[in-house]
Image (tube, rainbow, N blue to C red):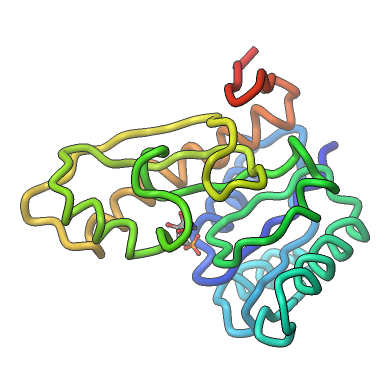
Length: 207
Ligand code: GAR
């Protein structure tokens, strides 16, 4: 059984999608055993509590720099015997200590079709605003492995939807979550737990 730790910072709807997938048997070979939040008031913590999942706050604002913060997160993950780290709306970019400890064992969900609208500064509603400003007709979500470079690791799954002419960042965010993120994140985790994802350089193969 794969021990899954989920990193969160906000509402935790992706965490909820994982809990639902676990409860309905869609993730067979993994269990969410730890939730870590970078913010004390994240609603994601309530979701963990309601489902009896051990949760811990490691507040970003209590650390002077990203090196000591990353070390604290890494140590908590190691202590929880983590086999897979899932970044589910985690709004802090951690440093290389994470890759040193969990290379090939960290996944992130990004609310756009990587390599577009990603990297530093592209998070939350900002991503959807940038999509609308650009005039692209398709957007979506990506699940990828986390490497040292932000939003640039091997892509596991992507799903696209159409951008509508009357979309706002909020309506687009909601559709991308509902139709893309909440589907492909549990699916990618299930594939990982079943040992079906092979990493070849910067690409993945589902076997
Ligand atoms: C999600 O849309 C997630 O993809 C995004 O933040 C939202 C968190 O929602 N993540 C990023 O932008 C990170 N680059 P949630 O807390 O309800 O899961």
